[in-house]
Amino acid sequence: MRVVAGTARSLHLKTIEGNDTRPTTDRIKETLFNMLTGYIVDASFLDLFAGSGGIGIEALSRGAADCTFVEQNAKAVACIKENLAFTKLADRARVQKYDAVGFVNGLSSISYDVIFMDPPYSNGLERAVLENLSNKKFDTDTLIVVEAAVDEDFGYLDSLGYDIIKDKRYKTNKHLFIRKKDEL
Image (tube, rainbow, N blue to C red; front, side, top):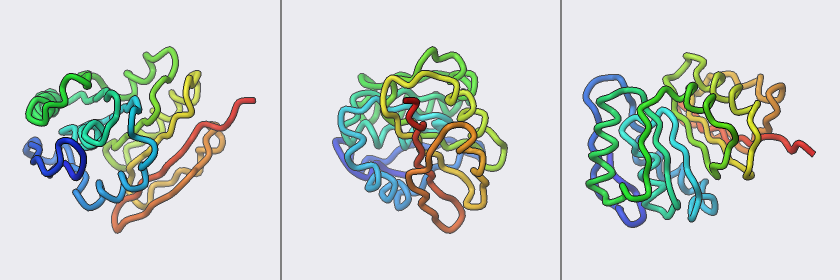
């Protein structure tokens, strides 16, 4: 796994051994960030279920103002910190050893420009995060991106107050781009 573009371009990132994380492939990461063009520069980025930190580091490399990495696995947290030091991006990062649902639940309001989450597939964790987010005040027009299994059902989004902006499908997974509906 490597950083695809930006100030840390072509640097190889460490991942933790085992099946506790499944890093997003370089090709899918490149496609994702091509779709995020215009959202990243100077953005406050939240990487939930951060794994080894590849997505948040890519955002920082491409010009995000800051990134908060949330990961509960201690080995993955150590890996994120190593990757941030190696890419020299640690000064714009905050790493939280926390479960993502609890982290979001503890926020009083949402001030992130982009929230990315890549939870374990088919465990309902993305729904739990989205339910928590739906009850929060959003200070910005936040773009939420969920990576999920291609067959994951998101039919509940409308009832939680979200609009689907884009649904990008790959062979086994997808990226769903959503926004909270206007509350006017």
